[in-house]
Length: 311
Picture (cartoon, rainbow, N blue to C red):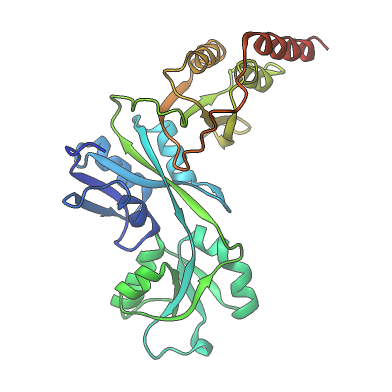
């Protein structure tokens, strides 16, 4: 990380899982700007008010974070320069003295609620969810606002502790071992050098002519070149029912010839292609002994896809 990066916007307040991700990349003397939403943090970079933003992009239980994916796809372009993975577990926090029987409403972020709803149903039946902009924000509201509309929160243990709440239950989750992936964003510029365990993120819209096989033709660009897709999901195209864009993570770096070739092939299919960055994988899963796709394999793979299209 460049020592010249001194300001970061992030999904706040302090104590969120996003704040934990931020601490993995920000220098100790960095100026931090907690924001009430993913797009607000991203817009601070677009507007030149912060040099970098850290926001969630994917959860291992709930999938993609739509606010981040949509802003990356349609707003002024930003570039992913790094990713971070944070284990996610929740603590049920209350004001000191609150009893379990007094809880009627729980405040937390919608993704946190989705990861704990079965636990709540089993342990606190008839309790309802109150959505907040982040898990730590729910802790702040409960601790600081007398008119808070909920009696408990689901937040990180750090947030519960930092806001002086009492932990009634720890390690609350329906699926233990869940993680959230966060990305560090900058204005477009220098692409980090490849490290051998890289990921590239793009967003592409299918052609406008509705021709049959358009999605297969798009996927062919990767399969024929031996490129693995680690994530692909569709997002609705605003204002156009039945139209979608695809957000894709692929293994490899933009400086690799096969990745460049695949992106050129995609651009021939759809000019609405947005490159969102090449960066090191957070898990650094590299296997130097894995079999590589050679020219013979490449031709065989291409012939296989072509044979499907001819059927």
